[in-house]
Image 1 (spheres, rainbow, N blue to C red):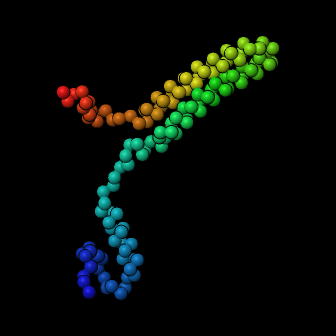
Image 2 (cartoon, rainbow, N blue to C red; image 1 turned 135 degrees about the vertical axis):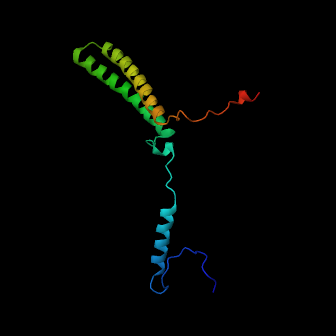
Image 3 (spheres, rainbow, N blue to C red; image 1 turned 45 degrees about the horizontal axis):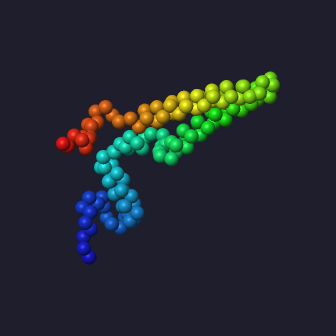
Length: 128
């Protein structure tokens, strides 16, 4: 029979160790020798990608408008000044929704910011 290719096998008689114990010790030694890799910056973030970002922004915008319109309608019913409170608070809800989108977008962009020491890539126009 041919000799095993792994020359770093632990010493000892072959009969005293089980095959799985030998394998486990070799795996542990290989993991200890392997350098620790840091995860990519995108993987460290909150995990919000693509469609998730769009759903978050859309739901925050729509929720602000619905809350504004609902409060306005409630005030209209309470004080009998229909439709003025609904119109005013609907517009305020719209403004709050836009402000929420701006804040959420700034937060998402800050999470995925490029490090300042990263070299810039040349534009296609720079090749001329």
